[in-house]
Each structure stands twice: as structure tokens, then as C-alpha cells.
Amino acid sequence: MSIAYRHISSLSQIMSGAAAVGASSCIGAAAAASCSSAGSSYVTVGGCTGVAGRLPGRVLEHIFSYLDLPDLMQCSLVCWHWNTTLADENSEVWRSLCARSLSEEALRSDILCNLPTYKGKLKSYQHALSTHDCSRNVYVKKNGFTLHRNPIAQSTDGARGKIGFSEGRHAWEIWWEGPLGTVAVIGLATKRANMQCQGYVALLGSDDQSWGWNLVDNNLLHNGQVNGNFPQCNNAPKYQIGERIRVILDMDDKTLAFERGFEFLGVAFRGLPKACLFPAVSAVYGNTEVTMVYLGKPLDG
Image 1 (cartoon, rainbow, N blue to C red):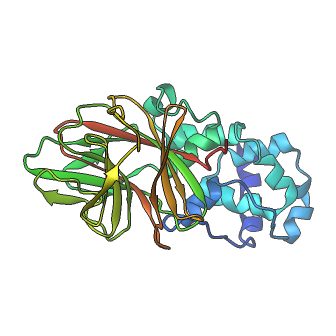
Image 2 (image 1 turned 180 degrees about the horizontal axis):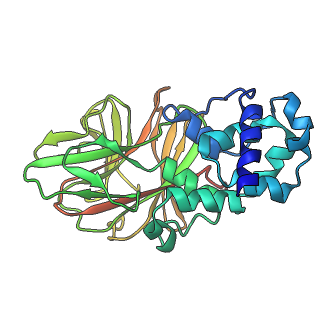
């Protein structure tokens, strides 16, 4: 253990010469960058060609397993050798960090069943619904992914994800684990969109700062108006509790689309603004619960 900590001390001196890089996400950039696939630009520092640069991968992996996310981000940028060591998303490094960061419930349940790697699970946690950017009438449960709405009368309550996006392609899953009530909306919101209002209304889509799909009546909502039904087909099936909806945001094409199961439902919104947009939900039913899991870049095809 003491040897490992001595190596960590040496690594910290090397990392102090590495420049931090930004991430495409608008909020929590450092955390998002550290979880993203490592880039090809490395910071060359003298120490990396010394003892630390010659350490076997298994030794580096053991040392890295004691580090936190910001330190791992810098380590991945130091040199090719360190980057390669961190490239295995199921290594002891990411398993150890998952064990320290995520709840046992999240790791043991099927919440993260569609994320095969520890690094992917950790990345999803970094993008989960925020405990600090939500209505006062909701809270995120100890698993870190599920939103619980308290039974407050005549109130509509929402929450944003921890990280918003201004570029790239992103996908996440959302599912209800309780009654929908009269309004249950999933979609996007800017930082300016309200996350609480009086009455039972479709909060997402009630202004020009949010875009929503009401799962109760299949209406698309933006700027206080109904933009048609979704999906655009005759007798579209209603949402079933527990059914996972995949949300696909393409900030390059400025579109928002949805999938149900393995079926692509189509593009719901086009012409999204060049702004920082956050995954968001809003609910009205007391004690209902909503879970959101970030998946990363969507697969084509």
C-alpha cells in the first residue's frame, strides 16, 4: 500500500504539468471529459519518460485505481502508455471508481443493464438527474438515477440532468416506475426553463426554453403549443409503465428523436437552437418515480 502511495505522489507531480482539457458538455465539463473516450492529443512531460513511463500496465492500473475522476482525466492525457492503460473500460481502475462512486443498489439492480462497462456506468452517473437542479418537491433516490416526486397537490415538478449538451450526439433512457397521472413529459430544457409551477400542466414545452413529449396523450409540446401527435401513426400505442424510452439528441443536426424498444419512432423536434440543452422530465403524480440513464453516443443503424 505504501509503495502505491509513493507512486501516486510521483504521478501527481507529473500530472501537475498536464493541461486540463474541456468537454463538449456545457456543465460539469471536467467530469464529462474524464469519462469520454480519450483523445489523441497528449501532454508531453519529462516524468513520463522516466520511471512512471516505464511502469508495467498492471502496476499503473493498480496505482490509478486509487485516483479520482479529475486525476484520471489528466493521467489519460499525459502520454500514450498511460492512455492505453486507461483504455480498458472494464479494468480494475474503473471498477474501483464505480464501487466508490455508485451505490450498491445501482450496480446490483437492472438500472444500468444496458451499460456493459464500468466506465460507461460511471459516465451515466455523471450525467444523471441533478439533485440540485430540480423542483423542491422532488428528490433523487440513493441509487443516484431515480427521481421521486413527493405527493404535493396542485404542483408540477421537474428536474434537469447534471450535464447539458451544445454539440455531438447523445442518447439516454427514461422510464416511469409509477402512475403517470394526467401529465408525464420527457424532453429537453435550457438552464432558464422552470422546473416547478402551480397546477397540473405540461411543464416541459410550456415555454420557448423547453421541448417535451407528453406520454399520457402523445402530444409534442413547445412554446406553450401542441406541435402535433407523436409518433405520427394511426392509433399510436400508449406508454406502458416500466417501458424504456430512448431519447436521441443530435446537436449537429439540431434534432430530438425517440425510440421504444428497438423501434425508431422518428424525429420529434427539428431546428433546436444552438444552446446548451439538458435532458429533463416533469411529473405530477404523487410518489411516482422516474429513472434516467445516460447511454453515450447512439449507435447508428
